[in-house]
Each structure stands twice: as structure tokens, then as C-alpha cells.
Image (tube, rainbow, N blue to C red):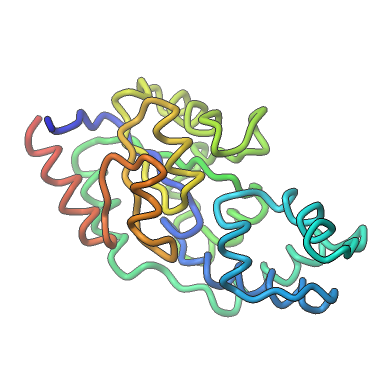
Length: 224
């Protein structure tokens, strides 16, 4: 396989730029259990990681016959933001990846299913908010969330790069499907979703961690 062209890189946020997935999964699991849903973190991950929170109430109704209260979403965000402020830590080896792209004048953006308010908190906590200023795209900005490609297409527009010359980095099956559907070369970054799931979703390449992601991007850019 020939090396892809790297003119821009679009990152998912949770699980790629900020180590939020386990925290968010824990918070949602605890909240649903408080409402009487028989959930654990494995179920929450399999059902909802890479999706949107709008999926949660109908699924709890279907699985347990439990109707979530009207204010469940605001409570979820409040619990999640508190966990982020208290416990969120940066990925140890992300910095060199972003520095590599900056040194090579490769524009970067974010394409996430999460809302802007959530990303504002998490990116600020790990010192990344200014680095992506004006190039943060949420599924709330487009018609369809992942696995549809809309948010990645918007992110490519933000940085002025043809999506086919962009690399998408995502850690979820829905995110990988969206990246592939957009036409971007798509890297599945292993976080809490196993590599074989990401490959089954169509990932063109797998990065086992951020150091592996650095090696991939460095190799591709050195071929230009």
C-alpha cells in the first residue's frame, strides 16, 4: 500500500486528544445504575462509546423498561465535568505528535460527536484548547453524527484541505466508520476499543498508542 498524502490531520477528541473515555464511561455507568438500570462499564462501552448521549434513554427503555428523568442529561454533564476537572490527565505521548505536525506546517482540527461545552472543559484541563482554537467541530454543528462523515467533512473545510488529503484519527468504531466514509485515510487509535474492532469497522491503519501514531505520521510525511 502506498503511503498516504498528509495535508491535514483531524482528530477525534475523547480517547484521542484527551483521556476521557474511561472517566465518562464510569460516570454514565454509575448514573444509570442510580436510576435502577443494571449496567456495568463493559455494557456502557459496548452500547454507547463513539455514539451520542441521545442514544441512552431509548436504549434504557428498551433494555430495562426504565424511563430516565427529564433532567438526566444535564445531571450527566454535571457529573462528567466534575470528573474531568478532578481526574482528567493528558495522554503522555500526545505532545510530540502535535509538535511534529506543527513543525511540518500540517493544519489540525477536531471532529467529535461530543458537544462543545464538554470539549471546552476537557481541552482546557489538558492545555489544548488554544491549540485548536477555531477548528473544533462537534456533531452538534452538522446534520448527522458519526458514523456519518459530516463532522469530519466540516473539519476539513475549517482547515481548507481536501478530505482525501487528510488523516482522520479516531478510537471508536463509529468514528472509524465516519472517517472511512468521508474519504480520509483513517487511523484507528487503540484506547479502550480493541484493534480488531477498529479494523472490522474499516480502519486503514492501526496505531496501538500515541507513540505508534507518531511513527506512522513521521514516516508518511518523510515520504513527501
